Every structure is written in structure tokens, then in C-alpha cells.
Image (cartoon, rainbow, N blue to C red; front, side, top):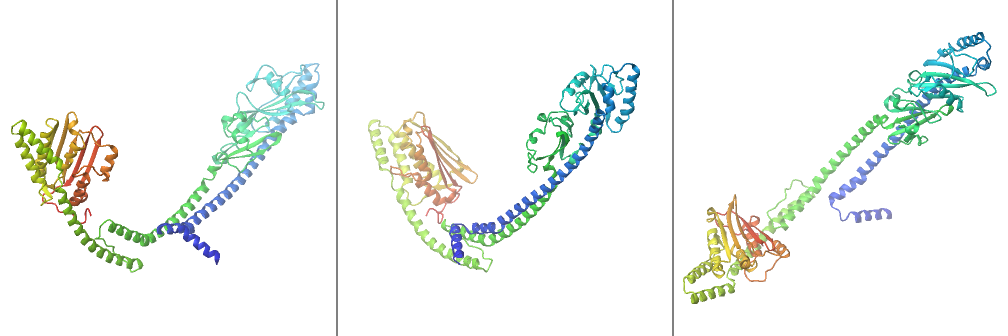
Length: 597
């Protein structure tokens, strides 16, 4: 009981911070998915190795039977060469001294009578010779030969005779030097006292002796080799390697692992069966090719398991969609309420516990919306009054500087300049101090900006070139007041435009489909990067009086919502560009309910 409680507490503590979807998926994985996969992998692994072991047993049996067949063939040719070399009468006749031709003729007749037919008992014998060194005995060109400088299988007879006689082996097999597919079997003719009198020479056709068991072994899924005691390849299913040394063949990388029968190396298994005279028959089997059929079965079983797991996942996802998805949808609607959207409801389709929760949520969102509506209207009125108060806060320094300019110009120049100044001031204050409306036509906003720039041009004559790009079709559209003048004022106050060579301010107003684009750019000193970041995210607070970017951005959001956008781009010592985009308003825009609060 304690163990159960401890386990439950451990599970609850470990999954406490997880979402419901994660908990269901976790439990499904631990209880169904992972055990099924582990069972399938384990069963497949055991089956795979069992089948491989059966394959290896079958292959070893096939190699053993092939080795017996090759051993029988080899012993047949060994027996023929040995019986010929150990024939007592032949040894006696090769070792005697001959006084006349009659005795030599008797020996030739004996050899022909005794061995000529014997050489035809076995298939594949292309040449049968008895070499001797008896100076008193002739060579008849049939069976009796003397080693001379004639070519024999790619080598001089005398050289071959000396090499073979100098070998420690009485019986030997080699490949012909001029054609590896020709085999040479030789046996020393030695009497009972160990004295040598010659050699028995057999030239065999490879195709008749070894071609059959080495033709397409294991249905093309492997290769077979015969390796003699000197590690020379006597026979092979790879015809290009017949007669090669083992060290230079493709078998060499696997030869040192010949005792590890069940260990595949590079997808191949080497099986070695010993023959007589320290010969070996080696089978290099492509285990991967032989296991293709088994792999198809494994893949089929694996696909079936994967299919049923997919079905189970589909069922789990259906449950999650019915439960977790509804909870998440309810959470999304709550997020909408937290963002100020109160006209949200959740469709109630089921009469379960979640259905009751959805009904309660719909009732709560309706009551909350009415309460927020009342609070929003109160805040809007307060915000409208604060904007009207802001319009009255005109920088007094600007008025003093302008009046001082008029006074000094009137005294010194005594011309009409003061009239221009007075007209500009009149136009500027007439629009700026009109607190009854906060929305105006674009033509009035442009007129107000021109009045401001006229005053600045009189104050800084010839220092700044003002460029206008105003589309006529935009003048009758509506915008909010004091949208452009604060931005142009920043060109003088913060951009230091009057101290820049070839200074300019470019103002453009154009229509782009369903929006109006305002742009004010200059070549002033620009904004520092750290300040620019604060201006963009709305955290910068200016040190001077007047309207700032935050005020403009907030009023755009209040009247135009997300369609009213302000962007600031600036490069230090190169200039600043402020872009404002509002929707096309052919009628006066109203404050959007709930925006900006």
C-alpha cells in the first residue's frame, strides 16, 4: 500500500507542470507505444539472428559437401600421379644402364603399355609425361621426356624440373604460368632409398576439374576459393584471381577472421573447410543478399505493427481533439478577453462537463463586456479632454522668438516682411488653437504645416530647402490634427537641420490603394541608435515641451486602430525619415471604441 501511494505521488509530482495533452501522450507512450516498439524490435532481433544461424548452418553444410567432392577429385589425380611415380618396374627401368637400343625400346613399350591408357581414366588430363635424367635412356616424345630448353606451360622444362626437384614436396599442384586455368600436378619418382629418378607431369584442364562447383556458387550470393598450403589460389569462382597469391586477392581482408564464422564483416561471412595437404576451401558468402527474403518478411511485420500503432495514435488524437482541443479553444477565447475582445462565445455542442463550463464562460464574457464598455467610454472622454488640453500647450519660446523676429525686422528693414510673418502666425494659431475639433482635412493640415515652415524660413532664411510632393486627390480626405507639424518641428529642434549643408526637408502625401501615406524626411544629423530603438518601441521620453512620437502613435491607434501606423527610420549623420499610414477617410473618422485604453 505504501509503495502504491509513493508511486502515485511520484507520478503526480513528475507530471504536475505538464499540459493535459502531454500527460495523455506520455502515458500512451509508456503504456502502449514504447512496449509495443520494444517487443517488436526484440522479437525481430531474435528472429533475425535465429534465421542467420540457420543460414550459416546450411552454408557450412554446403561447404562441407563441396569440400568432400573436391577432396575426392583431388585424391583421384593425386593417386594417379603417386601410383605412376611409385611404380617399382618404372623406377627400375629409369635407374638402369642400357647397353643397346633393344633394351631401351623394351622400356618405351613398357611405359606406353602401363601408363598410356591409365592417363585416360580421369577427365581433364590434357598432357601426361614422365621426365627422367637417365643419359642412356631415350625420350620418345610420347610419355618419356628429358628436361631440356623447351617451353612447358610458360616456363622452360629444365627450370621447371629443377624447381620441382628442389622442392621439399613429393606431390605438388600449381597453376601454369602462361594460363592460370591450366593445372600442373607433379610427383617425384623416388626409390625406397630416397633417390630421385625423375618427375611425373600431369597438365589438367581447370574447367573439367574444378569449374562445376565454382560456377555461380550459392546462387550468386557468394564466392568460393581453393587455397593451397603456400596461400596460393588454385581455384576460384572469380576467374581473374586464379593463380594469384592470397595476399593480393579480395579474400585477404576476410582470411584473418576465418575463425569467426558467425561474425559478418562488411556484409560477408567467411567459412573455411580444411582439405588434405594443408589445402583449404573458403566460401565467402554475401549474407545480406541471402537475407533479403527474410528482410522482406521483417519489413512486412514492421509495417503491420507501424500501421496498428498509427491507428492507436489516431484514436488517441481523436480523444485529445474531443477533450484537450475544447479546453484549448476555451483558453484561446479567454486570451481574446484579456486582449480586450469581449464579443466572444464558445459553441456548446456536448452536454458533458466541458459543455457546462462553456455555458458559464459565455455568460461571464457577456457580463464582462458590458462592464468594460462602460469603463471604456469613461476613459475615452477623459482621453479626449487630455488631447484638447495638449493642443493648448504651444511652446512659448516659439511665440517669443516669432514676435521678436517681427519686431527686429520691422525696426531694421522697414519692409513687408512683418506682414508675411504676421500672416503665417495668424494661420498657424488659427488652426492650432481650434480645440473644438480633432479631425481635419488633409488640405488644412498641409496649410497649417506651410504656415509653420513659412515662419521657420523667415527665421532661418536660405538655410533649408523645403520640397513638397502632395497629390491633389488626397487634399479632400480626412486626417487627425497636428499630425505633420510636430514631426517637422523635430527636424529643427533635434535634427539640427539649420546647421547642415544643403539642408532639405521633403514632405510627401500620396494615396496608395486604400491608404494614405505621409512621409517627412530630412538630411539632418539623425537619431542615435539607442534613442531610435526607444522611439520605435515607444519608451523614449523627450526633454522638450510639445508633441512627441508617442502622442502621435497613440492618437493614430485611437482613431484608426491597427490601420494607423507610424515608422521611424534614421541613419546617424545622414538623416531621418518618418512615415505615417492611415486608411482613406472620405468622411470624418470617429474614435474607435476600446482602442487606446
